[in-house]
Length: 153
Image (tube, rainbow, N blue to C red):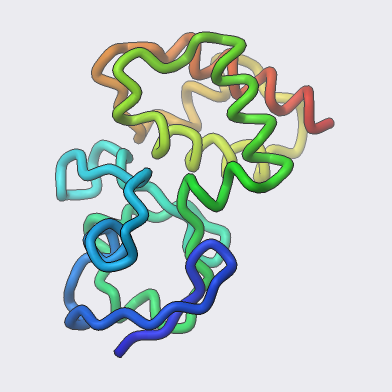
């Protein structure tokens, strides 16, 4: 059994230690906002926060999450930052198909948290380059991140 905190609640996972955290979150814990995209940590759809850092859950073994604080999109949107991002995503019409959006928002939360000054479109696009959107809504995503950062200032 592997113990960790998921969205502020202590959980015990029964999966084997080498099971990717993504599948523990989705299949064992029943929290499905985090998506499977590529399975090799290249697209960002599976991004969660582990101890506050964006992490690709499709390649992180459960054993690496032992004792950690794990936050998914469901946990993020319960925070002030998450609500600001969600509101900005809607205002800027960022999602089209929506599949990558939970990973995009998790990455965006980290970008805003790590920013030392107001971000512009180019900076957001550069810092979020590892998250793929097959619909190509990068401009709307960048506008949403800039908007959310202003809301949180």
